[in-house]
Image (cartoon, rainbow, N blue to C red; front, side):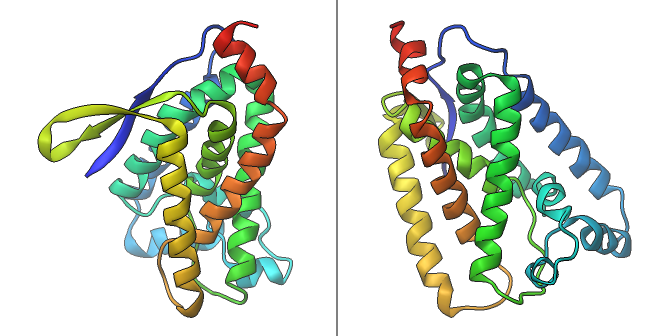
Length: 220
């Protein structure tokens, strides 16, 4: 398995309090989830995870936000938090704390709507930070395409660096292939279209902030 563990940091800018704060919040909520019984956890999901059929009926709209702070297991949590750790801070340092907060939440909501659109009437819970984090990845691709991403190869206990545009380009192609493949399927699984929708939202947002990012990197 290969996953990102670091990147080139921008100089100056805002302290990424929300990027790191969201990591802490997600971990605390997951620990709370672990304390629940099976029935209690199901009820927790009923109250705070997104169900496309409910959204289409105009119900439980608060879950579009609350669901992005829930996770279905340790690997789900760790994977999402590693991506947020690596990619979130540069975005927040560049655009500022409050704008990052709004961007992250809006990206997550847009991602959820994308999932709902491609899963009309589904009664399956959707949860996780991956939609919002996908928005972060999309913005990062546009704002820091030449940043070097440090990748860790677990089985080899070694790391290597790769340009962000290569890593993130491969990532979104993988999501698109999986998303298209999921159109003829039904049932539980990865919310590929939430990833794709979030990423598109992030790319559009990144285009409006690219000049500021270049100024942070190159000092002009």
